[in-house]
Image (cartoon, rainbow, N blue to C red; front, side, top):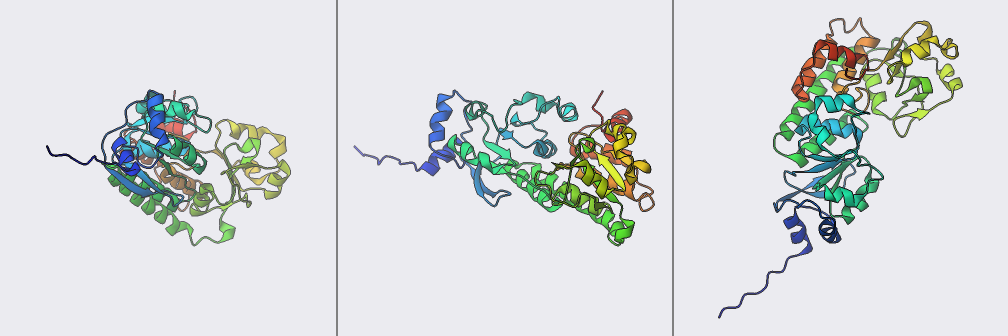
Length: 358
């Protein structure tokens, strides 16, 4: 009788067989204990380098993922239609256009975030987590799910993050990412070809914030600062803001005295223009106070609609340089091409006004 030596599987082999990629063996026990969905038995994995420079082993063509960064959800909608999303930090109340444009968002659990119970997350069966905060990596590793950091704060980093995400998903995603990144380059280069030569005196100072009326503003070192400069402006908020925005004293705002104010909140334009506290500011005196368009994600804040934002802002600041910009048609084309949704004229008007869908 012939005897066979037993097959010994390494920890790496076990992880590959579970479809979990990088993680801890302890996570396998947790998966069973929590009664989770069975992970894929596809043994193929790949190693990607995320936005922190960390090498992460992930399954090839993952069938389920979680996304813990608001902005990145729009990236995955563009790349996959969110078909494989099982947990998200977003919700339909905060992002109504996102859920209207992409119905698959409604199939995901909307509680994933900093305080999410990771045992509950495991039960949803994600094979990979995307997040902007590396702090969650240890928790994810404990339950055997690889975490891919996707954070970005510049156009170049955004393109890298989109390419990285597409690499994780596979399939059609890399081609979509390549197309988007190339178009973003073309658009930004076309805008800067007309604005780069502007002298400082010809560049209006722009104060931008998620909620300018509450003095929550975006400073330097942000993607907001990037599009203001590309569009031919100067950021009036000349202080760095670590989390994309920070609150400043009204005295400081009056001292900055911006030429243009752009707020991320619909309704604040009227508040700023009618409040005597703001009356001495040039932007108010000249009625150059605007609301930023907002669709699936705020055009101004770390989403793929940055491609529209830089065009809208350049026309706003320098209509003489961009007289033929048909932003309404560009919005329709963008949504159809990258988000798979055909907007009506009324929907375009609502997005440009920063308003929710009706």
